[in-house]
Length: 72
Image (cartoon, rainbow, N blue to C red; front, side):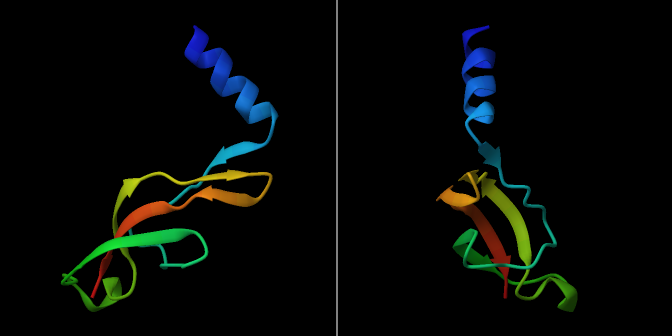
């Protein structure tokens, strides 16, 4: 119950979880690449393969970058 109240209060103040999915383009303004792995297809080269940790924005300013794995 306390956890939900805290999340609701932070959301009211403008905190948002970044929506990052596998296959999205890698953007250094929002993502932090922690490692690269060989891409299984040509379409995944330079794209996000896996999301390790979600990122957050506060009033459209990044407060934590999303940690991702990219394809090379």
